[in-house]
Amino acid sequence: MCGHESTFLVLPVCPVLSAFHGRLAGDPINAMEATPVQSFGTPMSTARDATNLVLSGLDADIEYDAPIGLRMTWYRVGGTADVLVRPRSVEALSVLLARAQERGVPVRVLGSGANLLVHDDGIDGIVVHLDQPAFREVSTLHRHRANRGGTTSDAGDGLRAMAGAVTERLVIGLAQQGMSGLEMMAGIPSTIGGAVRMNAGGKFGCIGDVVKAVGCLDMAGQPVTYHNDSRQLRFEYRRSSIVEPVILWAELKLEPDDPQRVHDRVKEIFAFKKKSQPMGEHTAGCAFKNPSPGTSAGRLIDEAGLKGFSIGSAYVSTRHANFLCTTDLKTARASDLIALMEHITAAVEQQAGVHLEREVVVWSRKSQPAGHRADS
Ligand SMILES: Cc1cc2nc3c(=O)[nH]c(=O)nc-3n(C[C@H](O)[C@H](O)[C@H](O)COP(=O)(O)OP(=O)(O)OC[C@H]3O[C@@H](n4cnc5c(N)ncnc54)[C@H](O)[C@@H]3O)c2cc1C
Figure 1 (cartoon, rainbow, N blue to C red):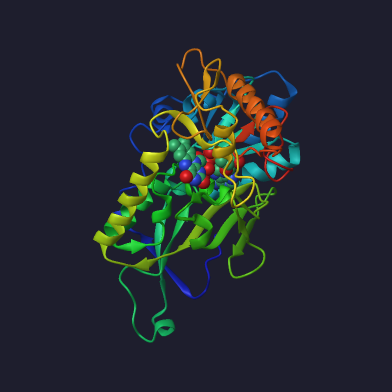
Figure 2: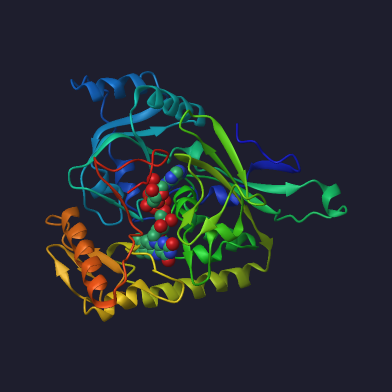
């Protein structure tokens, strides 16, 4: 189903990396894992009837009215998902997509919620979360000996990570193994799927720089593979050319290196981020994209006098003006963040004549899921 390149042998899941498959302590997902999944009810509405038909007999954990905004996004605000589905296998996910397309039920994929704002009114259709073991596997890739003149590296030529693998854990595991390439992702909370979708990165590079191939499922649940040596797969600033609703796996190009050197680079990048970003607060990173390579959205927001500015429970970080944060969890509302984003957009437009485009993905009952049109 995953369509490996024929020149690769895929070894069993690397035992060292598999130790990193769980979530980080303090990650919003932990709360969800501790909550029992509700039983399958008998909702009355037509939309729910259609959803029930999609989910009938599916090999998945299913939860109705799941408080994903509060529990599973880094902003820790926002409403519920009508249905949250955690498939146990790629096959189950494929069946879900095919049935959902047939019945017109929207499907959205939630990664680690680090770049996501869910409206207070919640979100319709099905939200899929790929955190079951089948979606967190990581395997080392080795070329055939013949391709390397008889020499192979123990560390391999890279790895294939399923979309639900937690990127920060991979970064740590790879440093311990002495595999270099993914250090730029230090301090960027994400799953592999979310990182590839957003082409996450920054000053030290972007994940797209090391992606060799990506496996997806299309809206009919059929596998599609993109290789980075073709024009089919392009990574640009905070976006990829992938139109399929689900990214299933990514193959990453890595090089063997001294573990201490890799570890030092990770430490250096993490320290840089810690110094310049409010990492301990409820935020989703940069709220807006930089309007052009030489122009920083944060600087424009700062120059508009908005550092520290707040609306209700949402405020502009005093450390980094492009980081919007939320305060006290009980009173925090997604609508405050949306009002703050609108205020910033208008103020920067007036002050600098520049229109800021949102980087954060916003889910609402009116937004179109990926594969239909834009996500937000
Ligand atoms: C403290 C902090 C610092 C940050 N710093 C940076 C930074 O330096 N650089 C940077 O680029 N970003 C940064 N971010 C933003 C965020 O880390 C990235 O955008 C990251 O890639 C989001 O990944 P995720 O798994 O959390 O995706 P989510 O936020 O869950 O989802 C984001 C989008 O990806 C889609 N998606 C997720 N998984 C899949 C999948 N398997 N298939 C298809 N679509 C999928 C979602 O539907 C959504 O459209 C930061 C965020 C925080 C909280």
